[in-house]
Amino acid sequence: MSVDAYGPSSQTLTFLDTEDADLIGADTQGSECDFTDFTIPSQTQTSQHDHAGPKVTGVQINNSFEKKLASTSNALGELQFEEEDEEGYFNAKELPDYACKYCGIHEPNCVVMCNLCKKWFCNGRGNTSGSHIINHLVRAKHKEVTLHKDGPLGETVLECYSCGVRNVFVLGFIPAKADSVVVLLCRQPCAAQNSLKDMNWDQDQWKPLISDRCFLTWLVKIPSEQEQLRARQISAQQINKLEELWKENIDATFQDLEKPGVDEEPQQVLLRYEDGYQYQNIFGPLVKLEADYDKRLKESQTQENIEVRWDTGLNKKTIAYFTLAKTDGDMKLMHGDELKLRYVGEMHKSWSGVGHVIKVPDNYGEDIGIELKNGSGAPVDCNSNFVVDFIWKSTSFDRMQLALRKFAVDDSSVSAYIYHRLLGHEVEEVLFRCHLPKHFSAPNLPDLNRSQVYAVKHALQRPLSLIQGPPGTGKSEECF
Ligand SMILES: [Zn+2]
Ligand SMILES: [Zn+2]
Ligand SMILES: [Zn+2]
Image 1 (spheres, rainbow, N blue to C red):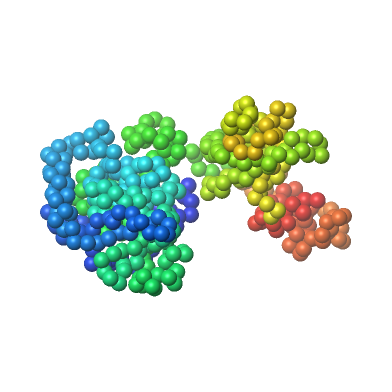
Image 2 (cartoon, rainbow, N blue to C red):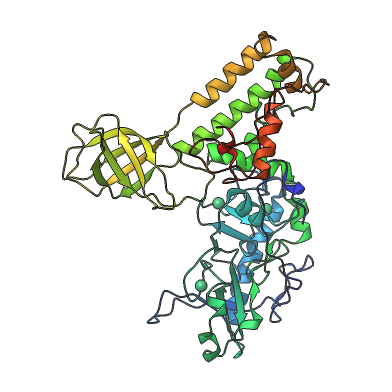
């Protein structure tokens, strides 16, 4: 699997791969499959069963062949109509809602809607290694989809028959032995449950719904080669950019990619720099991008329906404790971060107050504590109907920009040694001749281990040392 294909800003991509995608004889996909081919499996979705258990979705294969044939003929009619008007086929104004937001393909058989952003994508790869829908789900970290009402299975939200989980990356299916039904089940725990045996399902037959980075073709067809050639040829880079644009403007379109400015890539960092100016020229924009990203991330994290527990600190300040739902984003709350708490209920007049974080989720509990700047007037008798907003602070980014500017205009802002080291220039190694103590331990702290002692010795003898390591390996202790 090539992660590179997804560009430099790539997160870890997880695809489920299986060796084979042959499916219960229902594979009619294939580039040569066009609309005059009526060997399409005759599958329709069963309605939601009224089981005693949780909400369920099954997909049934039955013999409603005629019905299928009828709806396929309709599709054929539409298709021919489109073909007469080939010029306008990918003209954004003409495209139906369900056209692939990447390439414009809009065969109902071939498209899937992302439940989160309500955008449609096709199951074709175009010029990329995964299908457009899978590309989108991975890039945007979305996970749930709905099939098109005129597709092979009708309008179906893909979810586990047993527990209702909708993450398509953990969903798979087991063809029932009775042969007429396919059951969608999540890999864990549902596909592994023993009770399945009773229902005459063979759990060893479980296969993921996504194979080779495409949805299985009995769920969503792959657009024909001809169709794909006719579609907008979007590259992996353009897909990445479009996904980035959507983070700021959900309605951005392919056309927006051509607007000036969008194409500007920041300059790459270098191993060596001429001088502080060049260093600032390259790092300044990167710090700005990071700050913009961080701001967007923080400001989009408002959480509602928060329960609050009130307390008063030893310093007599008002403290609010609450827990936040886990976000799967990259955000980490830190001591000192600022949060705004708002009361939106009816038991008290509307109120909002800002506080800084004094407790983060840790081994002692998942709750977060904030100390209010001004606790007077806080609705301490109310415990529910609160909203938490995140407040973005530019301080650390401002400091970085300030330091970069100083570094650029004043080469004596740091020692000559550090100046040249930062710019990647060859610098003769400097070793201080200092008196090293016999024992490396600080009062009231546990003794340092061997690698900590090594790091301290190393740092004491040099003007600049970089200490890195995973969390909890004692980097901070060394600083004492
Ligand atoms: Zn989405
Ligand atoms: Zn597409
Ligand atoms: Zn399940």
